[in-house]
Image (cartoon, rainbow, N blue to C red; front, side, top):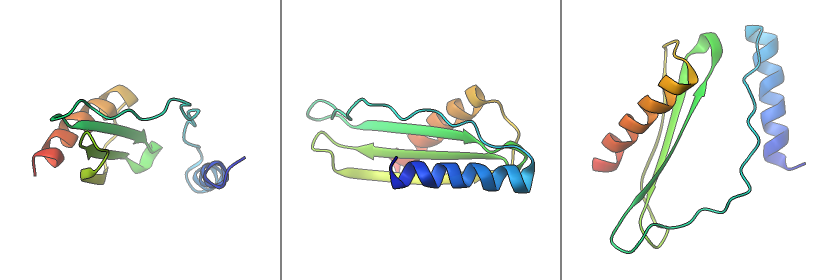
Length: 99
C-alpha cells in the first residue's frame, strides 16, 4: 500500500468521524497518461462529492510534451450528484485552460 493510499484511508476515517459519512473511494487507474498530438493540449479533470461539505474540482492542462500549461483546484459549497460535479469540472477546466 502506498503513502497516497494511506492518506486516502485516513481522510475517509476523518470524514466519517466529523461528518458521519466517508467519501466513496474509487480505485486508481492503472493506465498511464498519454500526451496529446503535437500542437494540441490535453485537459484532465476530476470532481469529488464531499458530502455535506460541498464538491471539489480539479484540472490539469498539458501540452504534447507533458508540460503543465494550467492547473487548478476549487471547492464549491453545493450539493450536486457526481455526474453534475464532473460536468461542472469540465466546464470550469475549459475556463482555467483559456487563462
